[in-house]
Length: 116
Image 1 (cartoon, one colour):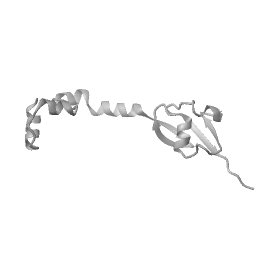
Image 2 (cartoon, one colour):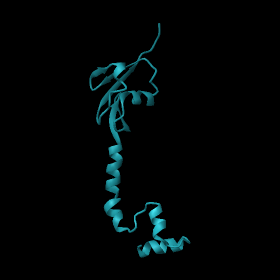
Image 3 (cartoon, rainbow, N blue to C red):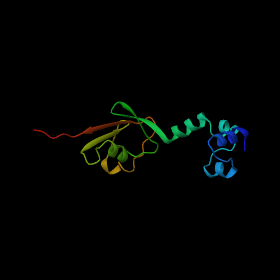
Image 4 (tube, rainbow, N blue to C red):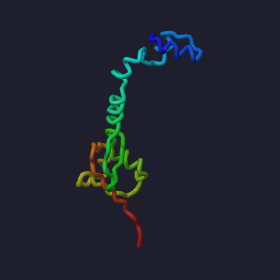
């Protein structure tokens, strides 16, 4: 184990051991941090977990691979009477659960209102 890590553990009142570091899954030396655990890689990993779509003209960040039904549920419109347009095409209600969204999709949701 590296000398700096030993000193940090001693300051914290912990006896430096290989097992303690291994048990929590931390890198054993700081040279690996820049290579395996760098900020650029972490940012890229986070970006692959989310994507941006345009919902009624506003940019919104959602989970990658999210379905149209999940987006409607998050928006509180799952049981509402809505018409949904995805990239200029109407998506029938029967296809909402299977319609996966992609980066940059343009979604327009129109909520039907009653009145008289």
